[in-house]
Image (cartoon, rainbow, N blue to C red):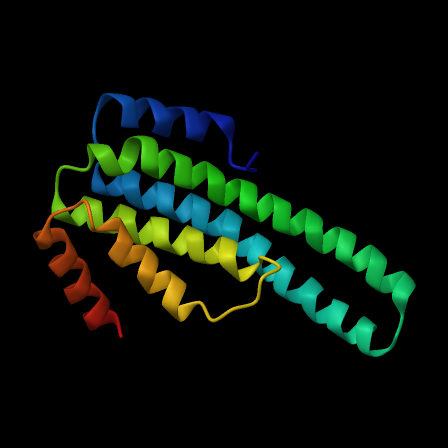
Length: 157
């Protein structure tokens, strides 16, 4: 579903099955998905802006075509997010042995949920759902990981 090379995904999946990704592999995976998602998000922002302009001009023929194209971009973005979220949930997060790895993957997980929410048809303030998701993910986890995330989040603000 993504435009990433199948060999890359197979290699990452195989590595994740056998052992934890090292820092370089983890960063390469993150960058690869970030580049794919970044292109889709940029396209989505541009096409959404064009859609608003055409709506304000009451140009319904153009709006219909634009909405179809925007829907295609949203689908690609959502599928790519689903792919990485599946990999994170099924392999990467469970196999993370260090606090650094776990926090890295949980941040990725939150980012890709946020990317999906940004293009959803439901418009709402992302602040609460984003933070609620993170705290909810720690209900079954230990206090150390929650504190670690809070420290990192606080530093980044």
